[in-house]
Image 1 (tube, rainbow, N blue to C red):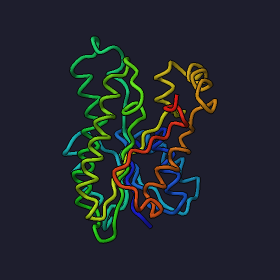
Image 2 (image 1 turned 30 degrees about the horizontal axis):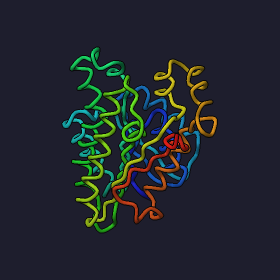
Image 3 (image 1 turned 90 degrees about the vertical axis):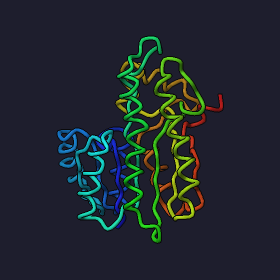
Length: 250
């Protein structure tokens, strides 16, 4: 049974990933900064009776002290972390034209989308078994490399930074048995996407213009994350897998 740590675990892609890994028999460590959401999620997932197991840990992973506390607690239960999925991310508060974005809003977004992943890897790598091997999957966005909506300059930049960070670290740790990759989803039916497009109805209209006529559901992205964490992806290192249903082909 692998120990799989997933951040941003109570909503959207993160939530779907927790379900997928638990269903396959892994021991999932679901991390969120909201204790209320985490408690509700655990009660929900317990009813699924998966082969694996899910534990919830509350932590604000933008804080190094919080990340160190998290890993210290995990070290008392887990011999090593086998898979780390850095999924936590936000669009707000730094959405809109750049002239209107405040410094603290920019910092909040980058702290969540980039700094948190950096901290989780910085301290998580210490708890990964080099002989056994491990995998890190960073969840970026297709907008970090293929499309650049001007109203999402901060978000796009943060995801581009995460992709670059992934490639740099992948080269450093490949010989140590740790595979690090990025997945960059396109349009996905999540609460974050609904907010971004102004509600479910607006999201549906945008989805209808997608090359296949609709965007992804979180389970589709979770399946790709699961693949990147598996031995089937043993030769995939430092890759940014764009999963956008062909949208970037336009």
